[in-house]
Length: 236
Image 1: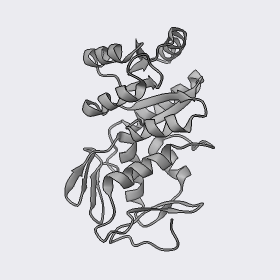
Image 2 (image 1 turned 30 degrees about the horizontal axis):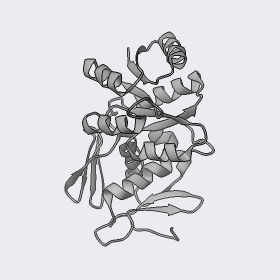
Image 3 (image 1 turned 180 degrees about the horizontal axis):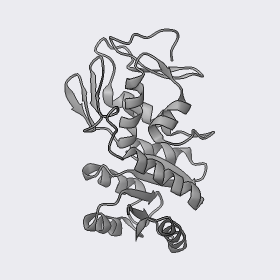
Image 4 (image 1 turned 90 degrees about the vertical axis):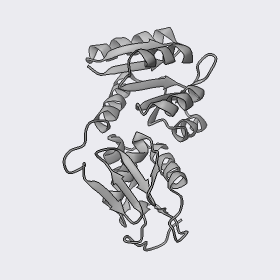
């Protein structure tokens, strides 16, 4: 039974989501602020954390920073509806996904299940080491080397990079990245894939030759470039 930690200071919402998720077979723990969340984390590691941005005292962003210092647990941020700033900041700080409030419990359930699927042990095919140029991703161990040096990625960033590595030199659409890496359809105004790509560019840096490592193909998607997967066509 997967344990879900809901961190939100709205008791009515906590109760609604807890009742729904428990009815779907999950164990649910709740916290109203950062301090309670830390106590819950110390007591038992959850499979997924659902974290509201607006918390009393330390907000969700501050708590997320602290979580990421010690934990790789998938985090789904609850953000204000239509607030792109909250969405981007959360993803840049290491959230795996986001959902705007007020959220539909069925949609939240689907997102949680998607995060759990991605966290499952890889299949034999996925467990192989993926290489392209100076990148080496041991997908089974969830370890990445760039130019021989380890790079720390969130689960979502690693999943996106794994798809790009499997198709190095090819243009991969945002829709396909969302389906294969995040295990959910791409929404109309979805910022997750673009922000994960931006984080990967920042963490991996340019190619040794100073060229872009991941390039955007306007209207088509993203392409991973390496010495053994040269770029083609126009990029931005």
